[in-house]
Amino acid sequence: MKFEQFWNILRARKWIALAVLSLVVLSALAVSLLLPKQYSAASVVAVDIKANDPVTGQPVVGYLAPSFMATQVDIIASQNTALKVVDALGFANLPEARSRFLAETGGHGDIRHWFAETLLKHLDVKPSRDSNVINVGYTATEPRFAATLANAFVQAYVRTTVEIKTAAAQQNNQFFQSQLKGLQANVAQTQQRLSDYQQQQGIVATDERLDIETQRLNEIASQLVGVQSLTYDAQSRARGGAAAPDVLNNPLIQQLKNQLAQQEAKLKEQAEKNGPNHPHYLQARAEVEATRAQLNQLLAQYASGLSGAAGNSAARQGALQQALAAQKARVLELKSQRSGLEILKRDVENAQRAYDQALQRTSQTMLESRSDQANIIVLRSATEPDRPSGPRVLLNVALAIVLGLLLAVVTALGVELADRRIRARADIEDALGIDILATIPTLKLQ
Image 1: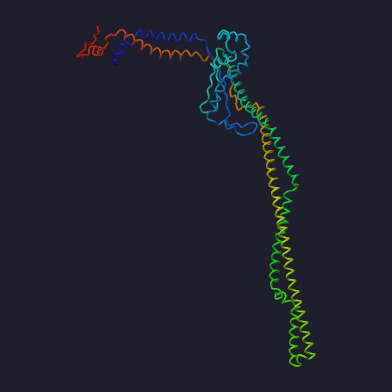
Image 2 (image 1 turned 135 degrees about the horizontal axis):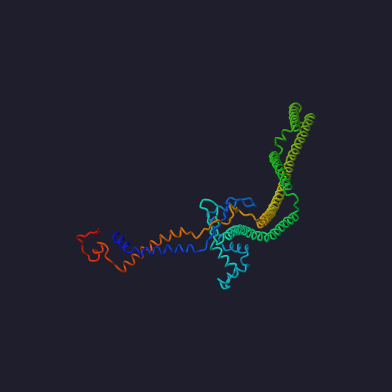
């Protein structure tokens, strides 16, 4: 459809279009004037998302979640919050409220839940886009009632948030209280096992006792090393027997050897001078034999002494080795006892630590369950509005004009389609399928 056709249709059907437009505008105006006046009151609250827990002092991570503000809006507009408003204002006990409930529901259902759903229909909760502020508005036919409901919803919201926090804390507190008895019994059992083990092993001061025994072990080891050196030295000396350097270098042996050498020289001289049968020769030979016998006796005696010293040193070395083995076994036993004792001590410490932590959490959750502090601040309480918020007559009329224009155009087009007329050159061309060569202009009669 060309614009010329559209315009001619509107000009031809203008009275019908004006009638439809007038009907829509007048109907909207009448309805706006007849509707009861609505009053809106709003409270403004701020949610402190940086608040710390009043008991622990730690920042609450959940406040920083992106969905936190949306959750707060849902809590305000929840049935639980509305039920608190119903109970706080006592709607369920008012005779006129009960009459309205019976009239609209026939007595079916719960009056508290019915009033809660009814109140939520007129509640308007809007969070701020760039801040942590929430506007809680309520619309009613009476300004005082609207302000009362807006403030009641804010107070119910505060109580709901406190109840959510305290309910979780109460559950945690009951859980920790139920665990305390078992943890306390575990501490007592581990302590008893530690005490029994100390009594069985005769442990008083494990570290001091182990240190003393370890020191004894080190002393025995040092003595053994010294005795081993002495044994090796004594055995090496004893291996030479009478030809050992210690024997040969003995002053008495050296003296007897010198004496023997002199006597042998004297004997040789007597043999050359007097002969073997001379009394002086026989006397000299007797002296040589006596000195040689005495020297051999001393050599044998000193060699035996070296063997005895080596044997004594070896015996002492063996005794020290046995003492060292026994001391090692004792030290290892003490270390084993200390290891067992340390395990039991750690069990006691772990049991005590678990009990202390549970006791601390019990005290903490008990305080949290009794806390009535919320991270919500009321910035502005709702007051009775001076002017009604609705119905908005000018806005409704403006919308009715727009809607009326659309309906008027649609009605005009519909009437024209039902009774089609030739109103422009394009109508003839479309209907007959021929081209128009010329048109006679409309003459204006003077």
